[in-house]
Image (tube, rainbow over all chains, first blue to last red; front, top):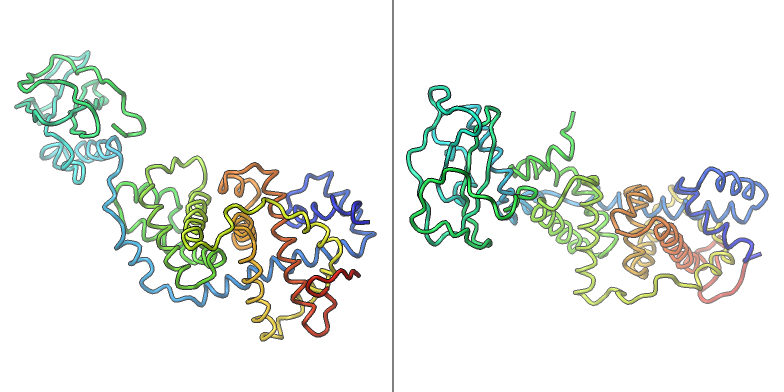
Length: 195
Length: 210
């Protein structure tokens, strides 16, 4: 009997979880109709599951969670979102407010940036609406490893950020880098916001 | 209407700690319950649950959103618990996947007695408490992987698909692992019930059947 029941007994567990195929379920239910011992096993499986659930839910309900969230938050390192994400947020904020420097809205990201902003017209004439930032200066830090990030605007302009990233090799822009006519070709495209 | 998990995750990723706090509050009891089942000790379970959330925050950028947040959260939780158990030296990291003796025990044991005992016990709180303690002891004897899958299924009601994702195992393994975990708990509980008046479970090491 044990052999005949081996498969059935294994299926009881999946049956209890509603994970049997329709055909297997029908066959098992037919077996259960004529097998009191398997019905007992099924009841026992269900009872143990319910007892486990009751046991731990009751203990979790009774536990004191005061200070739990605060304890977690106190242990968090300041979260540094991926660069691409920070730049998108910054650009979005700048588009909304159109006031101050673009990097003014960068918050966390600002600390990671070597302040270089280039606004280039791509495929369109420059000279858009008043208030657009125009290129005033470009500077870089000779000790920095920089990588470009290109943000294309809906007008066809491109904003190119040169971003300090000590984990990446230098792009060799040189210590007296002048304004590039075109964006330096990225050696690696940003993936998922990571540079 | 509460903000959905993914929105809170997005906010937390952009540095909004309050959003992450909301996620913690939403899941703290569930994560704690799973941790308690895994490590048994209440204080340690609280520490583990907090550590799991800290790890979740640390790796927020790795969450791609192609699975639900909660399966990812429980994956980190169970892995954190297993790390703690291994550090403690109380885990059975090298334990066999399946205990061959379990299947025969399940076939022979009078598990219906356990079922009726537990089902009719609500009025008998002392017995329930005792059974609860016994359940925790039985859980502690399971290999950590079996403990994790049983807790996630019974406490969180996870589907086999979600369990497969959470534990990174095939669905077929979910099915067999759950069966063996349940069978072992029942066997351990059946042993216990032999000592409870009015039940007919087999005694420790006994070979009786009904």
